[in-house]
Length: 292
Image (cartoon, rainbow, N blue to C red; front, side, top):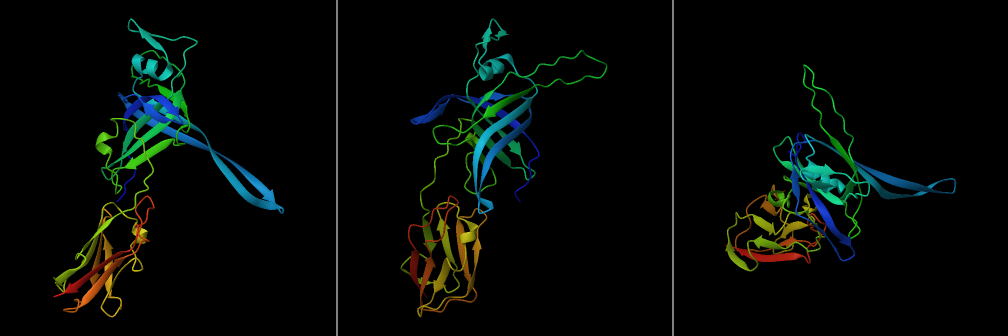
């Protein structure tokens, strides 16, 4: 079960130090304690082309991404870092010429299944927050600040956000998410597979299942009888059922009945099988074996 978001914690920021055609880099992330609320509002600009008295094409483009963060407190050193101010002798000094730096922000959100959703927004600037002060009354009133910023895509690669779910097959960065700003490179590597029984195996037990084990999760939609099947020595397809493991790395073919004794079989996984990034097997996987 994927779960729904029920919590929010571990706000971090990191100063962006480079974003150009040559690369992107950040300072080490810094944690801000007491995260209460986050609101991320992307805007999309669209234009419609009309032709022959009707809409013919729609073009869309990402606009400004507005971010609002509510925290228990904004310590002076955090304000200085996010807004370009200085701290001198324990005091925050604001100057009219101060320029807020570009920063990345990251956090995580607990889901109802006990797993976390992890987030980084890559590039944005914050503005000076409103300040409101209220005298103490008989019933205490919490005065928590909200800081707002505008985010945009990076120049280097056009990326503006990355999200990882702890319960998503293939995601393994939960323990290091806040060590540095996560930079994702495109996955263009095709999956590889190992098969049991192995190619050329003999004296295979007639009760055996055929198992394809991949080096990474694959798309569930590609686990079909058209992509995974077993042929007997006459070329006829063996009847059976397919199943995919919970981590989406192992496909099992369970024959409806025992395989025939002393018979040659061929197990095939086609190159239409794809990993989660959409990369296909480099070629059909063909495995020949003989039963006992």
